[in-house]
Length: 329
Image (cartoon, rainbow, N blue to C red; front, top):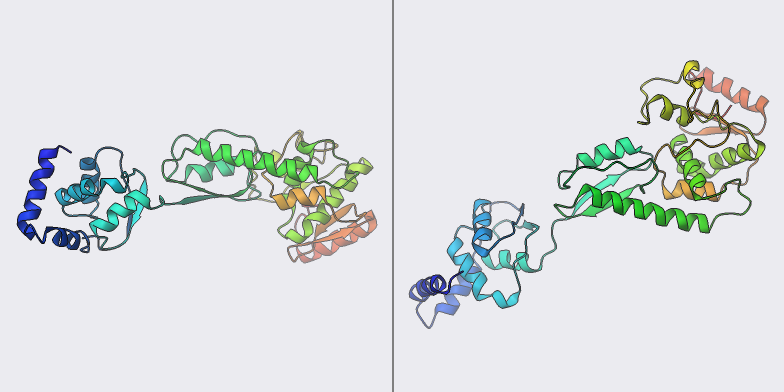
């Protein structure tokens, strides 16, 4: 702002308050409640004080741009006015507005990438996050850690993905380093793949170590995993969403992710597993069970022998006469 403009503004202030009372008058005026009727967050643009004042006036936060500009110049030794998204309380005075622009934390946004989501589902979540900018990049299943991520307005979707991938790398390395001995897994990626299956198998966190134990026992025995979530992943084209029960045709489908047809682990994760599922795989329950089936309560019945398992399947079918898939058999 040019000095002669400020001189004129300050001259009006002096005339309005009188030379001796100008300071008192100015302080009182700058502390008066502003016009904003309710609390509001706005994105403060980059640029000079004039552009900033115009944006604040347009948003209804101030109603005297000249007074605001003069106050900003007089108090310039308190720090620069920052460009970001800030929340302003109702009736914020010019003093409060200037303090917010200099010292307040920008508005914090959050995006939750929930455990068990596929990459397709997570990309959709990121695309709906209004405060993110830029195109959502492609990323493989299992590469990002499910978590709630905080960010400021204008952060790129690519930056969130990079943070989430770095978080998964750290979590997987920590979990793998502290793993139980003698697991039939050769590397962290195999643990990640199995954890993604465990994640999709149960809604009960307490069951995860037991389900992990069943699959690890099957790997030791050379049995096929026969994990329905892998078939759902294959049939749905990687979305992980299927609006119908699996059919015999689905279970016979020739697809590398179909663990009914193919031995061992699938070629990659089928979702992003939680840290809890990683821990379940790397610290499984002490169990020699080889089978499980839904029990009708949201949990599962576990069995060591095929005969016991088939009896549990029969009970489940009697409770819910539909395909009893969702467990090894």
